[in-house]
Amino acid sequence: MNIKQDLKIIFAGTPVFADVILQALIAANYNVVAVYTQPDKPAGRGQKLMAGPVKQTALSHHIPVFQPKTLRNPETQAELAAINADLMIVAAYGLILPQAVLDMPRLGCINVHGSILPRWRGAAPIQRALLAGDTETGITIMQMEAGLDTGPMLHKLTCPILADDTSGMLHDRLATLGAEALLQALQQLQAGKLIAEKQDDSLANYANKLEKEEAKLDWHQPAEILARQVRAFNPWPIAYCLLQDQPLRIWQAKALPQTYDEKPGTIVHADKHGIDIAAEKGTLRLLTLQLPGQKALSAADMLNGRAALFTIGQCLL
Image (cartoon, rainbow, N blue to C red; front, side, top):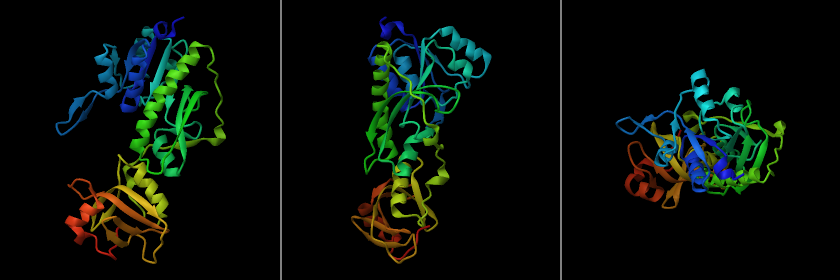
C-alpha cells in the first residue's frame, strides 16, 4: 500500500497553526481529499469576510473546502460520510467532533495537540504552559475520542521552553514541530508501528481558554509570575496595567530579584534599560510598552518622549 496516495485524508483546522501542518501534508504528497475549516469571519477595518489560512491553502491546491457551523446536524454528517475518508486529521479546528464523526473514518480521527499530554488538555495549552513556568512542552499526536484531549497518545516530540519565549514564539515552533510529528506518525502508521499509549488522567490539567480579564497585572504577585504573564499574553491579549487611569500595555518585561519596601506597583527606577516596578517579591522591569492609540516602544524611546508620565514613586494599578 502506498499510504501517501491510497490513504484518503480529511484535514480539519482553521488558523496558522493548522495551516503549517496542512502545508506539510501537501508538500509530502499525502492525499488530502477534503478540508474542513470554520466559516469565514469578518476582519479588518471594513469587517469584510476573510478566509482563514487553512482555507486559503486548500483553495490554492484545489482541495474541496467545507465550512459547516457545526458537525452535529445530520446533513453535515451525511456530507462528511460521503467523502469516505480513511483518516481525519484535526489541528486547531475549533469545532467539537461528535461521536458519529469520530467513528466515520476507517482509521478514526487523530489530533495534533500543542502540548505533551496529559499535562495540558484544552484550548490554550501553550499559554498555560508559560503561565505555569513549565520548562518543556511539545506535540502529542492523539487518537481522538469523545472526551476533551483524553484519547490514547500515538506519538510525541518535545521541545524546551526558553527563558524569553512568548506564546507567539512558542506557537510558531510548535506548529513546525506538529507538522514533523504528524509526518513521523503517518510513517509509523504505514509501517504498522504506531502504538497507542493510554493517558494517566491523574497528571492532567485543563488549559482554559484565555480571557482578556486575565491580562491585567496584579502587582501583589511575585515579579517572576508577572513576567510569565507578559510572555504568555503576547501576542494576545497583551498584559497591561493602569497608568493614570489609562491602560498601559506591556509587550516585553523581565523579572529582577531586587525587592523594594515600596508598595507593589510603585515605579522605583527608570532609565534607558527599562522602567522598574516593585512587585510583592522582586521587581518587574518593563522593556517594551504601549500607550493607548500609540505604537509599542522600547522603554528608552518611551522615556525620551514621555518621561513625565513615569515619575519615581508613582503607583501603577
